[in-house]
Structure formats: structure tokens, C-alpha cells
Image (tube, rainbow, N blue to C red; front, top):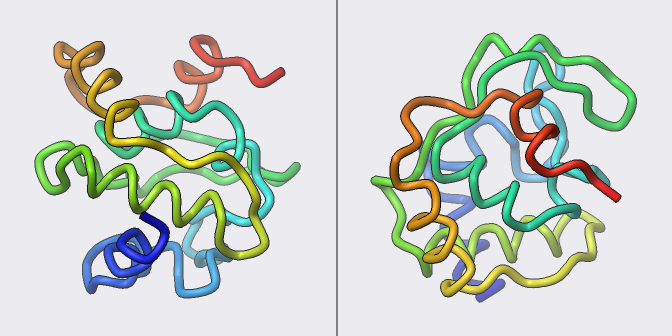
Length: 133
């Protein structure tokens, strides 16, 4: 899953475009890092929701505020459950991160549970639904 996720991550127009090859993103463009953050290594369901429906709005990551003007692309229609699980497993275990794998079954369950969701999630909305312990 990790290797399949790495391949998806590095496809042109997918994750690497904004999040960069090292996961440190483009801070001057307002994109937060994927390195060492609870948004990546914390609640797996929350992370799946971000990839399925995208994310837009102000967000704090590792103590720094990001304006959230450019939305995170929703991938629900671009990647199947296995693809989302693979790329999230990669992100959670690359760049010095160390977190549990995301399974296709987890993605399938969250996709079914959120099938009626329209539009992007906001960081505030996700924090209310999934506060980190």
C-alpha cells in the first residue's frame, strides 16, 4: 500500500503539486505541511474525509496559521477506496511521519457515511467532529 500510495502522491496534478515531494508544501502559497501534524497522523477518519471532499478555510498546523484560500482538491471522484487508502498510508508514513495504515475498508465506510456531504469541509467543522485526543 505504501508503494502504491507513493506512486499516486507523485502523479502530476495530484498531491505533490501542492504538498511537494518532501511534504513540506508551499508555505508562501498558503499550503500547510504534511510533516509531523495531527491533521495527518491523528484521526484517520478525519483525514479520509479531507481527501474525499476536500478542505477549505483557515487552518492551524503545527502552531502556524494558514489562510486556506486555495482549497484542497476533493478526490472522491478521482480515486477509488484502494487509491485513497494507499496515498493516505504513504502520507502517514513518509516525511518522517509514523502513523497507522488506512485500509480500503476504512475509506469505503467513511465514503458511505458521508455520501450526502456536499462541498468542502472546513477545518473548524472537522475539528468539531473529530477533536484530537
